[in-house]
Image (cartoon, rainbow, N blue to C red; front, side, top):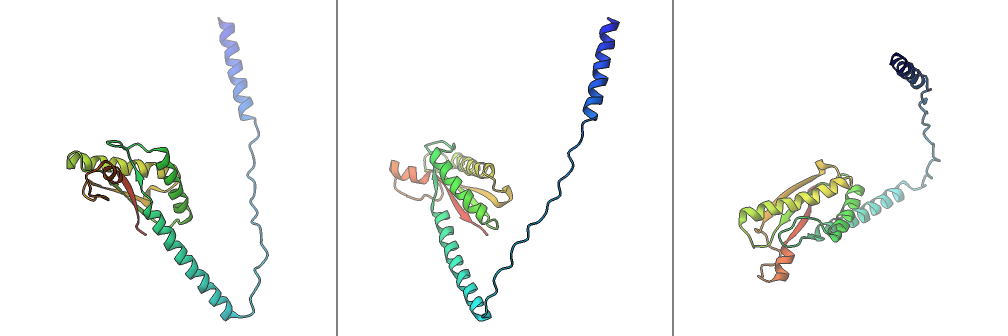
Length: 178
């Protein structure tokens, strides 16, 4: 018995020395790469005009991208708030756009069809918006850039009382709130 205790003690002490004796990785210094200077244009007016032209093209392109971002909704099955594979693909596209435009904030609006009580639909709309928010956070979008609101059945996309209209109304909409 004493021999076993002594053996365990010696092994434990030996393990401690072995682990503490390992060399530590030394930090590697990072060297910034120096790139070649950009070519200088002869005409300052030409450079300014080109810069304004590029800025206006970028602004109109960004406006078009924002409009596309806001016009694509995700839809849900009746009485559900789980994300379909189509919804996940749409959210992945939205996450790519948001990653490329880090200054934009988004309000996610949860909507329901008119079936069910107002209270139930407000809660379901919130769960739908929260599901989209959680998935965007999972994809790397900062939580501080996302807000949610539920409109329940209050803002139908299609006021008709058909299954097709109900399906359109069960959605999340995305609004850019710079």
